[in-house]
Length: 184
Image 1: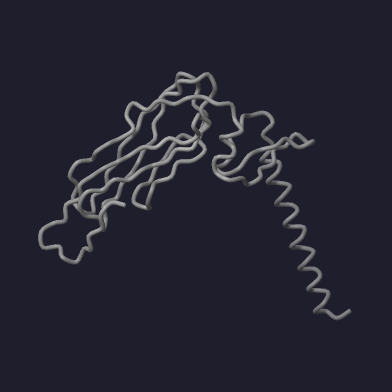
Image 2: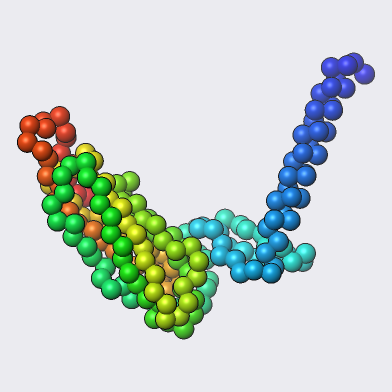
């Protein structure tokens, strides 16, 4: 066997051992039998014989459909930022309460466009507890009236809730280089 083939085989064996070692280490860190787990967005968990949790990809909403249902009430589901100057960033926190009898698990929150970015609690919300969903809005390259939505997917009935933000984006006088983009 030539030296080139021997070196190639050694590289392949070393890579395979590295991958196996990495997977074993990763699985040791994923042994979550002693702590609660909330699956990542778009995934569900199953218990394997070894007590480990494995994650498989699913469509957004499937995990929420399979969980015990609860209910959610927002203090308000709409917010108007009023007049903003083009380029301003605005932020608002939508406060809500888990009004059901099961822990509330938010699976996903998506803005209707890239200018609307929500952040939400990743931990379960206990029955009767309050929490917030923070929504950031960027008015860059926008002008005029804007109306954007955030769709929340959770173990509620129905599984989606919608939050709405509005603003009137004013373009500074003399700024003719900006292309007006109205709400969609």
